[in-house]
Length: 302
Image 1 (cartoon, one colour):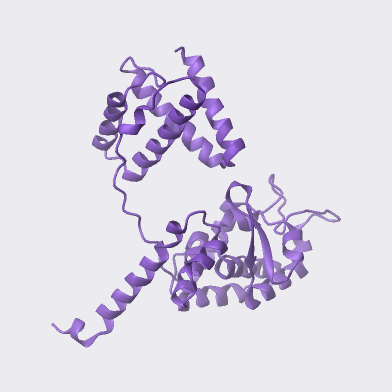
Image 2 (tube, rainbow, N blue to C red):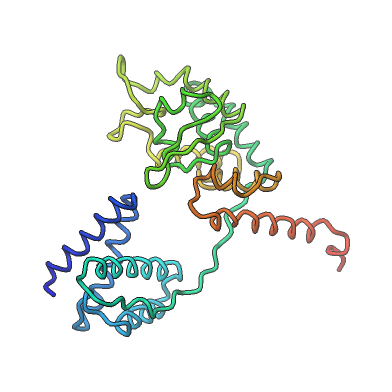
């Protein structure tokens, strides 16, 4: 199959992922890069990706392991391959799927970094102590990340209307464009109301914006990168190492610690699969184990 045909099949596959599954741009870019790298490896051995046999693909993953690439990288590339070959079979470009006989790497999911309740309160207090409109906005960002468990992309992408409809909830557009209602606690709501009172200072004179966190940059709203920089800078001032995602993990971990059921936490986080949410039960177990090791008199006995 000519290379140009292969290019068309890869792009058609990516278009399908975007249209039918709502795949994000970053996901599409990662899959495109993965398939290109596998295609280059095979081409150097005189094999096209569309005609590859199971043994050809297995050799690629052996080479990947010998290069000491992480199991996570191998798992993602295998996932990209499996979806791509399924697409080729459905489109009748190929009769068989050579990935059926491939075994995936064993993955040990790392536990998310745990932020203690005292540290979260310390971070919030530091944000509230900041002066001016910038300080009010920063306090609102921290409160919504920790108090509502939003992804940073969801936070900066909030519309103004999403925050003004019902004071008890935010309407959040998550992965794949799916909307969900996220409860907003009293502290986060107070921080949001205080920010709304100064939001106009982040707009050009007489300008309007549909975004909750407008910016004068190209996107029209605060970027994920800038939000991360603001949180990281605040954390350094308080002697902590915290990112927006760590605050999201803290939201979920502290809910589970407080007795919240996993289904409710799953809905609030916007997880498709409850298995993703179950990681927080392991976080709780590790925390309790560490507590026993540090506090129990027999554990401290030499």
